[in-house]
Amino acid sequence: MQTVRLWQPRRIDLQGGATLYLLHGGEADLVRIEFIFPHTGWDPEQPLLNRALAGMLLEGTVSRTAAEIAETIDYYGAFLHAESSADHIIVTLHTLSKHIGHTLPIVKEVLGEAVFPENELAVYAQNSLQKLQVSLEKNEFQARRAFNAAVFGTESPYGYPLEPEDFTRIDRDALLTQYPRQLSSKNCFIVASGKISKEVESEIMRCFNDWEGEEAPAYDPVLRTGAPGKYAVEMPGSVQSAIRIGKPLIHRTHPDYVELQILNTVLGGYFGSRLMANIREDKGYTYGIGSGLHSFKNTGLFFIATEVGVDVRENALREIYHEMERLTSEPVPQTELDLVRNYLMGSFLGSLENVFSHADKFKSLLLSGLDYAYYDRYFEAVRNVSAARLKELAIMYFAPGDFYEVTAG
Image (cartoon, rainbow, N blue to C red; front, side):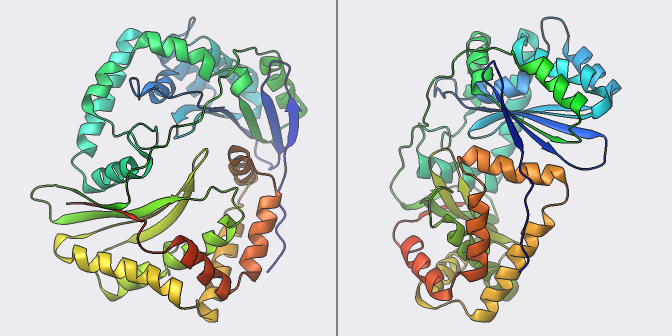
C-alpha cells in the first residue's frame, strides 16, 4: 500500500482571538473560506436557537437586506451559506480569488451586524415547521428521532425530539443575545483553502485580524441516556418498517477508534459488507442497509440503519444480530480482510481530489481535537490490523445486551 501525503495548513493566531488556517493548492482561481463556531450552549426551552441563528444569518444586516446580500454574492459569482450541525455553526464562502475584496467584507458584515428581521423570522419558523410536519410522516425520520432520544436523552441537543410547538417559541430577543456569544472571534476557527495568494491572505487579515468578539462560555452538552432495550414507534397503515440499532460508543480520540472503523466496514460500512450481503443480496429484505460510527463533541455513536417490509422485520432484526454475533465468534477470513483493506485505502485516496478535500481532512481533525498523527495510526491499522484483533474488538463493542433497538412502522 502506497504512502499517503496529506497537505497541512499554515496557522496564524489573529489579534482578535480567531485562529486562521491557510491551505494553498490548485490552479483554479477559487477560494473556500469556512468560519467554524463551536456551540456555546443549548437551552431546551429554546431548542432551535442555534439552528435559527444559522438559518437567519443571511436575512439582513444593519446596512443590507437579504436581497441585497444575495444579489451582491451572485454578481461576483460567489456562494455564501450558513448551517448548524450537532456541535457547530459553519459559515462558508466560495469565491473567485480576484473578487475576494468584494465578497469577504459581506461575510464580516453578517458575522457582526445581522439583525434577524421579525417578519423573516416568522417565515423561517413557518417553513421549518412545514418541513418537520412532512418529516414526521416518514418512518426513517421517526426511527432516527426515537433512537437519538433513547441513546442521548431528551434533555440533550443530540437527542431532543423536536415538536411543532418548538417553532412557535423561536424568540428574536434570544437570537440577538446568543448571536454575539456564538459567532464571536474568540470562538472561531477560519479555514481558508484553494488558491491562497498573498492578496487573498492580505484581504483575510485586513477583514479579520482585528475582529473582536465576546468571550465564549464553556459548554459541554448534557447526556442522559435511557435504558438499552427495544423501542417501537407506531405508524398505522405503514407497510415499511424503519430500523435503527446502536449505542453510545467511543469518541474518535479513543485508541481503539481507528481499528473499530475497519471492523465497522466489515459489518456494514461499504457495499460489499456483511449486512449488505446477507440482508440485501441473500435475503432480499431491503434495498440498502449500513452501519456507521459518528463522533460528537464528547461522545460517540455506533448505529445500523435500514428499512424493510413490516412482514420481514423480525427476520431482518434476527439476521442483523446474527452478523454482529459472527464477528464476536469467528475471525474475519484473510481474503475478506484484504478486500476491506483495499477498499479503505482506495476510498481514502479517492477522497483526496483537490485542495478542498485536503482541507476537509484537516477540518475533521480540528473539530475532534486531533492532529495528523491520527491518519498515521489509521493507515497503520488498515495495513496491519489482524483478524484476531477485530474479533477482540467485536467482543468488546458488539456484545449483546446493551443495544438500543428502535423500529418505526
